[in-house]
Length: 257
Image (cartoon, rainbow, N blue to C red; front, top):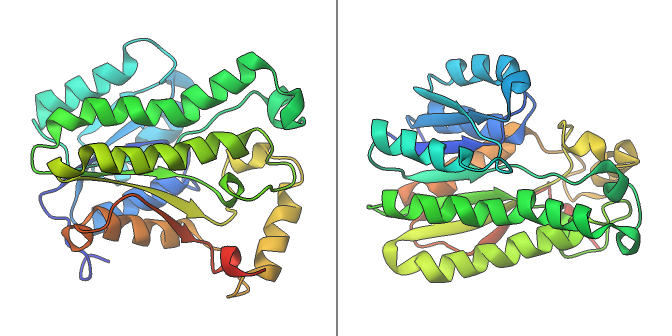
């Protein structure tokens, strides 16, 4: 990866690493291999013992807490980045949440509180990150977030997260339009099913993975390395003229009828 994509001198923030199986960690490995310097966040003290060693593996000089539901924590992350680096080149927003009671039920039965919480953590937090990043992306930059096929197709058991991810993808297009003149790009990456901690909360997830493997064009599942390879290209200067896209990395599952 380091030979194909050059991220030397670039500095990026990754929000959403939970463990070594996280999509965000796959992105971090690809970024670091290409020469980028990284800032890493962890959700809380309980998560720190899992995330900090991974951040150290990525040689991250900034490893700080970030719960987007806690007032001031997101702002503190960007204050530390400004203090240590004075600039930022890219962000990976790879967080999503919905209360299990709402996630496991029908969309029509979801509570107002659960819907709003899912939208806040999974979508609006990306907009807040973009706003904080904007003044630090003085040489342009790239904002990546993670979506899923259920944003535009009704997927059994995805329910509440479907409209939330649809809002996320729409938000990416508006970010791309609003920040484009400053050279700041935005994309949603839409991976196929992966065995991550977040995905394990979905009902019948094993069946979803089996279907994806059997029906994808390549007859395989994707890996966090596949996602990382795409992410590294998208934040690089080689992708400077591409913005506002939803990019599928799903072994061709979304093209099959």
